[in-house]
Image (cartoon, rainbow, N blue to C red):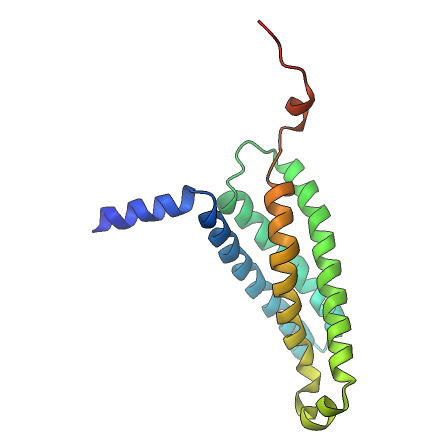
Length: 168
């Protein structure tokens, strides 16, 4: 039984396709937990404006995500770390901007609704948490996973793609 579990875990950890997607989602959940923890801690305990707290939380979650994806999710042994970091930062900037502005726009739009102001007034200070969940899921599925899969952790040997093959 232990050998079967060991083989299954190894297959899950090494295969691509849906298994890679599941590993990426696990990595994303760990990074999101880090992001949410830091954001809520900063916003509620230290009374930092939720937009700034979201930004700092996104940075912390992004670092965790990059490390897990590099070592486990996409298994980029043939990519140099500095190239992965440069490409990850480019995608990450887009992610941070999409998350920060998306959360701001959604939170402000919802909080301006008269029904929300009347019925949910005690919760209005933490409304950004709901916006963060919705926006994070949208950005994670549409931007982060796809950009990491096709850009950050692929085509690491760019020079070899442009060099002519020697005919012997």
